[in-house]
Amino acid sequence: MAPGDETRSRRELIVEGVRTTCLIAASGLIGGLASRPARAGTVWQIDPTRCSHCGKCATECVIDPSAVKCVHTYEICGFCKLCFGLLLDKRTGNTPAAEDVRCPTDALRTTFLEHPYYEIFVVEPLCIGCARCVKGCEMFGNGSLYLQIRHDRCVNCNQCAIASACPAQAIKRVPVSQPYYRRGVR
Image (cartoon, rainbow, N blue to C red; front, side):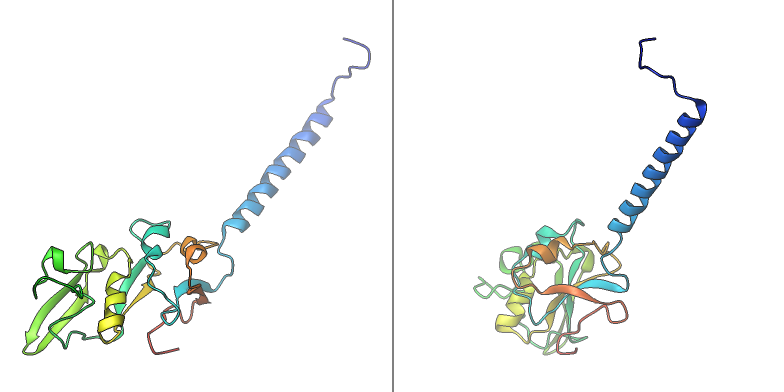
């Protein structure tokens, strides 16, 4: 052994081991707290009055497909045969053929009820939250369609990736007791 080298006692090794264990446990606790949602009792939601229908909900969500889905203000929507949430404004015909519809995933469907009534509905598993139908419905229709973050799919990120990318700043935290906006109600 060289001069100045000292061997550690068993007691010193145990104390150092306990300190290391405590440090690891404390860092794990801090990491666990940091990964929790920013504010307990709140969830992310889209304010439909501020949404600009930019399409970022479809591409920025950490979940694939996005936790954002199209919903209706009115339970039965489709009093008009030509729904511009479903059909393009410059379509070649009056049929919901692939080249004539707005939705890239065919998530918006129509069912004939009785003349002149149709029911327009969203097939949620197919909806990616692109907002194309919402934009068409607002420009040419009654504005029934809007986007919502579905909380059975959302992981309630500490900082929502869509909220960070939203140009209209339409996504914000709302109380868990009122997790969904309804268009025209709030």
